[in-house]
Length: 255
Length: 232
Image (cartoon, rainbow over all chains, first blue to last red):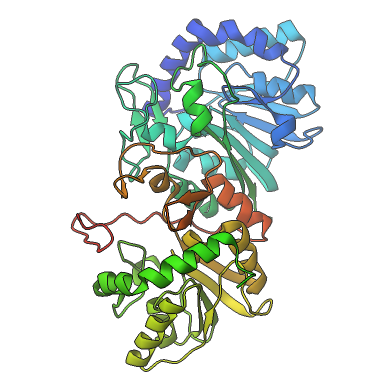
């Protein structure tokens, strides 16, 4: 398996993040009974993005410690979690043992998934491939892995929050500090992480070109009075109450 | 008149009062011999949003002085132009006479189109009704008058530009001037503009029976000039 340079860079970033935060927070995330979305845990029962996942073949691209996969496995889905960072998958395996919940975990980049065509009903990414992989590589992979009529659901930062986040500032402000046109790859100078973000029009172009119909774009609003996330400090609760910091895309592979 | 929403009444009065000045100020940019989109005049010949219109029934929602409708009629479309302002339609009749073109003009708000169901192949707007009328009324109306498989195309101010629009300077500035969530009516004293968040546009279009085909965000060239964005 040959990894892209940005996949190798992001593996290093997530190996560090695993030590700093994700390994420690995994037990709590795994223990959570409710499916929630985003930094402020908006409940799936209100957003109704996934529907009934029982007996569906689901793949999570960039599963990290695989808590989303665990939530779906508990609801009867046949889940495969894919992640490029061994440390994250080690935490996921430890959680599987601790919680007595087994499902497949595959070490790979979502840009090149070693699994057969048309073998899933749902492709999911929650801040995984959705921001850490090149959409021009992972969206075609998602299309390949899905059966016709299957759904693609991914959660990512909003375009707007990226436009308001400079390379140097940690937290989004109220000024546009980045160009919209040409937005694609962001190399963060502080930790070497490489993120990918596209303007809405480019997402729609790409999804349509890869055979998807756009079903929904849900821009998540922070609930009133929330605090900044304890680890992901790119946006304040007040900012995310007024403007979308996160967006959830739902697309369906055409029959 | 009683059928008009409060916003449509307000915008009708605004456009009746300002149409002469508007057409005079922008005629150099608007009265061109090819269809162009938006305040930076992105050529339809390059974007190919509508494609071939010859022989198609086409409705323009908020046609103003009908510069677009005239261009499409010249290319063989069976045009109908609709506008909420009688004064704008006076300008449309003037330009149609100059061009030697004749097609129906309808004086009505796009929020309630006085035309039958399923009679158009294409409904479009270049700003027009998609900034000056309530999308929650206009999009269902567009769906109603379109034939199955028909195309809706509209050019609007981007939601980001609406966020960055300063009421004080009447310019877009690189800062967020208003909230995104709940964005719908943008009041400007004597007129009302409308805008929705991206996700809400998609939800409304889907709910009205449309499939999302494309979202084109054209970038003006470095030397682009616009009568809409001249320093005042």
